[in-house]
Length: 201
Image (tube, rainbow, N blue to C red; front, side):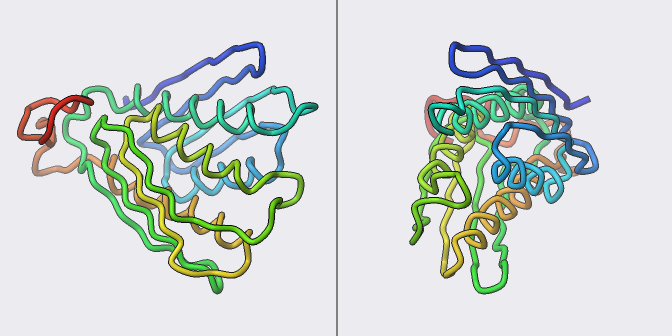
């Protein structure tokens, strides 16, 4: 049962997250930020990872803390659900279009957190959400989940389409990477025999 729950409570946010890596893409998300909810629903639906999120944050200040801490909590839950990562495919990649926008995401569930972010926006906000916060979410998720994550918007004009194609591409790449490889179901996919954040493999 590759499931995990995380609670993250600070002076800025109160967040609870539950994930099931072997789900059907069922989601129940409420962060108080409509656009972020929409993106997390896309992440769940297209990864087939069941996702429940409840977040209360200091939205009267801005959306930064809630966005970042939600990324941390979801990443921590994914990390815990992966356990020792034995049997996983480990690598995943996807190129996802949304109308005129195309974004590529490549993920390595290596327990070596790193983000390469090549996404630009022409507007400072989408609805009430600052577009700069999307990088903060991906950075927080990559760090907490222990994944190397490359996100590259190849082209696009509509900022909504660019962001949504990034989340959908992350979803499909994750779906591939966390899937159990039937040819190596009991093996950790590393020549070290363990996936940790130290050393090379």
